[in-house]
View 1 (spheres, rainbow, N blue to C red):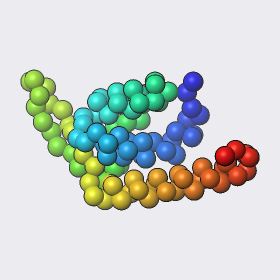
View 2 (view 1 turned 60 degrees about the vertical axis):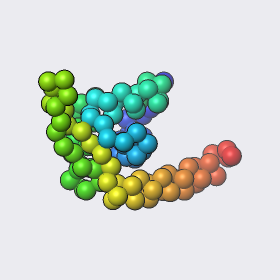
View 3 (view 1 turned 180 degrees about the vertical axis):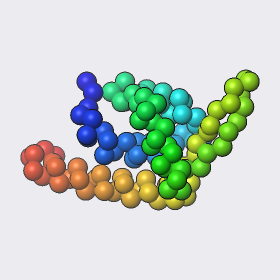
View 4 (view 1 turned 45 degrees about the vertical axis):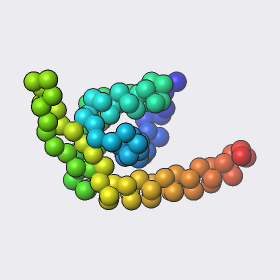
Length: 109
């Protein structure tokens, strides 16, 4: 089962920051695979979703990127910055408060 695209859109940046925070430096396809694996395929971002988000994170200073040649192929690797870690912590707290609020309204623990 997938998720409503609007629900995902509002949380995709948080997911990318979390993956990079837990797994360290990765290139785009690797990030997408890790996200798909960790969500049992429920979230499998395509290039048209993944790369604009990574570029925005880079522009905001939350990730840094550099090119590396591996096995004759050039790949752009992304790593979370200190600013990205602070942003992830802020988003995680915001999510906890949102979840608490939803649970109160829905009547779930």
